[in-house]
Length: 145
Image (cartoon, rainbow, N blue to C red):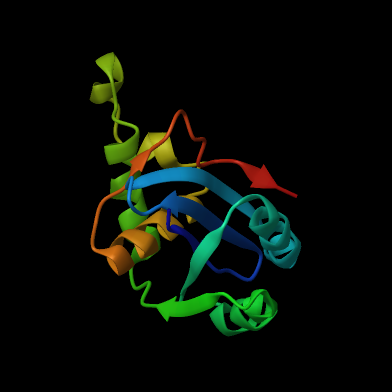
């Protein structure tokens, strides 16, 4: 089973998504402080057999890649252009508006949401050229401090 870790890097926080490629399913999605990424990936790698790490080529991607080179995994830097913008639309595909909420402007639902994990999902979907589904009820708004 191939598991890919996708990272949307940032100066303050990063979005991470762990997905099973053959199942086309996301198993973990998280947002955490950038300074915690090395330890988090180290711990995750002891539990999960990560085959490949895909890092968006935006802000701080070079620094994140250098931190993660110690894992001896195949690390790929991939285009992330407009991933944050596209994450807003993808949010509503993953979490559709139901009932009378449909009458409220969509922007209201994403005002205080951290979309970094969804941006990481978009980077992974672009890299693999497939759409992923969610396993269970994954909370893309999780924030580790």
